[in-house]
Length: 185
Image 1 (cartoon, one colour):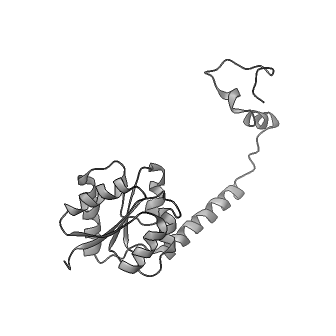
Image 2 (cartoon, rainbow, N blue to C red):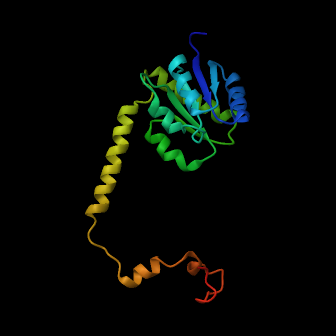
């Protein structure tokens, strides 16, 4: 099937891989060319099989999804992150992910992501340009560090510093106000 999108599914949970592969099997024009259960296996399969699209989990043993992308050489595939963690969404789009599927997701959401990949492929858009993404992330870190260092001197008073250093138990309004004798050490 030469016109099919060649997809690789990468997830450390077998149930998740099976579910996603099942959804993809029912989407026309997609061929699942393999499944990887960890980041190291993913890098090897991506470099050997050169998929058009990788559905990539974020948290996996060995290498996380972002480390997988950074380890790749040559042309990069299109990436759709499929994960249970919403806190990585912004970072995923910083590395030019096509989509971000938050588990549990349904078949319609997978079809939508595949549709986005089809659009990119029809436009002739390349996959992830990791070198450019890494440069952009590093520039962002430098800009942030510069921003912090160039902020006008807004030191807090010593009273404010003592308040900041208070132990967590002192901030809770749900507990009774502890005394020095009853406070945890």
